[in-house]
Image (cartoon, rainbow, N blue to C red; front, top):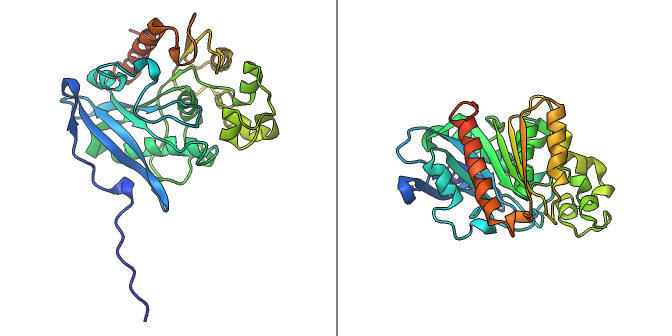
Length: 308
């Protein structure tokens, strides 16, 4: 006689939400919430910053940087480390919820796993929108560096079945309606050439993301490049980049800007003289980049896309 199976709890991403914590300016925080669970692997988590007093709010998914190798959902980059309130708190205070997302890094899995995770986070927000108080029809993406790359891919790949992955809720849509990307690698195949690195080096950040140098896996490198996915249906994009970026040269955002413009998409690129990667060396650029991003998100998530 077989032993009956023990009852198992629902997957972590289906379990009850934790109690909200109070934040500055009346916002509410849900910390360490699982958005996707996989057998034998830690649940993937996000932090959610919810506006004060709103029954339903638009939401932006934030994806952190770190060369796909490090980093976490807890910050928007070193230039904002001591900011109080934080960038996420300021966006929530302005009426837009922020879901800051962890995703699997290149030491855990190679591409397209990272995009699968980002898409799962969007699907989770929509699947539980009623409980969370977020509007499933007003979802944007925002990221810095490697996270900016994933945010661009979220915006440009829509509901492409081959890139959805199989973690978390299988539905609803993973589409986003606008994207803001800071100093993002938009043409993965060309990063080594643009930086003057050896394109055959297996230890570059992008080679570790792909599992091999981009030149050795050209089809995968193209799949991982936002410029490959440009179309006339791309949502509005704000691209911000330092002109003196040594790690992800500004030409990466220029290339994506040109491709989006040629397709007839709504795109704006603003560059900052003297700003290195992560806005290092340019605190004024860091302040302006946040202000431009907050205004862009408000325009497309609250004001209906109208120019302010």
